Image (cartoon, rainbow, N blue to C red):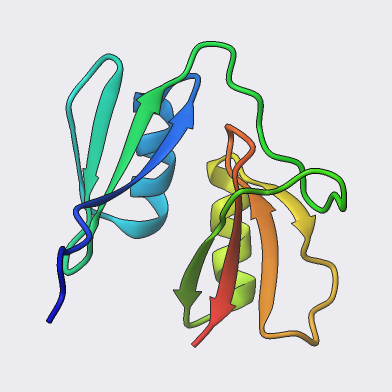
Length: 119
């Protein structure tokens, strides 16, 4: 028996609304709220929330002496098409050159790493 259920995954960032809009462009869903806290309600999934963090310093990837803290794995049907779309939305490729793998690594506009993973 579980003691709790996952309510939200929260990302610190300099601009919550902008980052929520970025992930809504990838995941769909509804962006709710303004100001210091914004939620992305994802159909069939947990809420992805964004919290204003003045002085936010993005994680480094890869960095043996610095932790990336966490990353999101986003499952897609077509890696090439998804890559074009996330780059157009403002993502930065971190480790996406090897097209023989089933995943590619990017950073969102606030610098958080995420992977596109083939299903």
